[in-house]
Length: 378
Image (cartoon, rainbow, N blue to C red; front, side, top):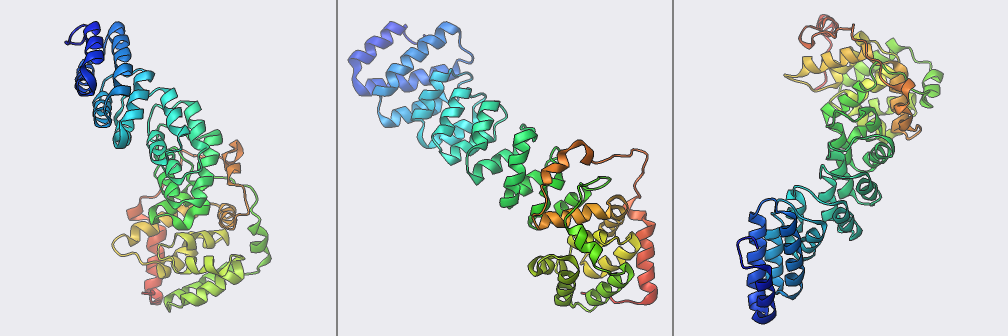
């Protein structure tokens, strides 16, 4: 078989050769099978019977070496997968990563062991079945959920979408992985907003563009506060210009209903993303809001591009949507409502966004500030 003696000869050698001969036979047979390519059905059946005899009586080192060699074979039956996994030892992760295919039975066996590292490796594979996915999502493991979040072969919908969105609220690494995906609704990452990178925060805001949202509980608070938008922007401009961020914190706490810790994060967020949410929720226009953001942010070479992005968002994101985002920060809404058809983003292909490098709204705001000579905070 496979370039060696007939199967009966192998049987005789096993019975008369002792452990040393068995070790040699196991490694040689596994090497021959791995090099064979795709075996015929009779060859696979004979090797499976032979391996089932050799592995139990070989020494520990030979079993591990033989399993590692066998793991490189082009095709393994479920029974051979069991032999590999049961004997490969510390090379298990490498096998699970490199195996061209794994049977559902084998993957379920790995999950049943509750070996978190091995289960997380399985969770990164592209050949997961629905049964395997269901078992993985039932595991209470951050490593497994991080792997699932980064696996683009998994379509985030239904129960899987709900599970990933909930996990993102508790684990910033899951949130970061989901933010990088193009098939995940970034609006569902609103509760993890302050754990995300600058670009990903903007991506969350952008996910609310041209989109209706359910009524936000915090909207009542905003409506009850009789703050003229012009007075609010003037006050914020002055405080940011003088770098009085603790006072910004107190002002935001008074008018938003958010807790002071959250308001402190917003006041000290030099990206301007969280401040944009507040400004737009209170109905600020691009012209009013950008005057505040120019003082609050710390953009250098990328300053104009960032401000241009915000200028576009002032035009595409409704105040109610940002009020909803604020309510998500307080855990007052069920974000999964956003997956309903009536809350899907509306895309108007007729709209042509302004080129960031030539956005007149940004240029007007900067020119106006230059004219009045207002100093930007450092």
